[in-house]
Image 1 (tube, rainbow, N blue to C red):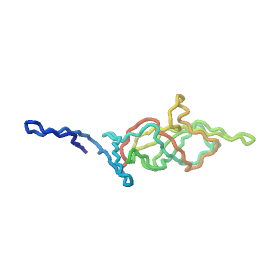
Image 2: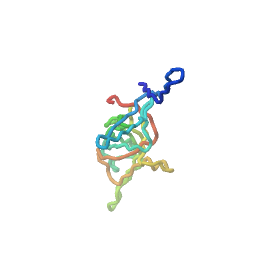
Image 3: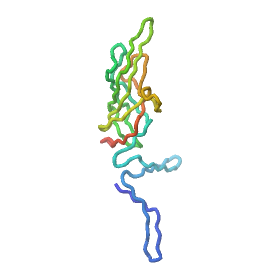
Image 4: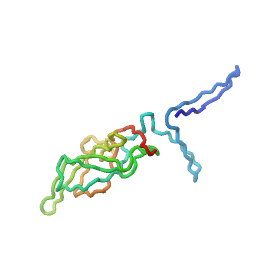
Length: 180
């Protein structure tokens, strides 16, 4: 799609009409009006020909795909998550709810004596979206110790369907899903 916006028109002394224009390629600029206030908002999409930009730090809502018990898992076991809600850039779905995300158990301490609880450490790795790996992290901001930003720690078992919020670790451009 090509959008042409006339910026300025001027009549030259020779009788020639001169128009300068701005030309853009890709998705149009989106304009919305709030009916209550009459305020008009123009939002330029973060799209180029190679997709919509998913920003570092954007929240991603996941849930555990199965129960995880520190007594029954070992270091190195895979962990699977499910995307709880559509992942959006502007108003465009770039990953559908139900998409899979993956991680790994990096520590599982069994419960100790006298009621001492176990500990479970899980590294969150990535979400699969339109055939692309979207790197994720457990904290909203990167820290110097990058190992700790990818770890989810729990002092108890995790039940299937338990929700967590993780964050995009690297900017990536994703195409819209087929439903857009």
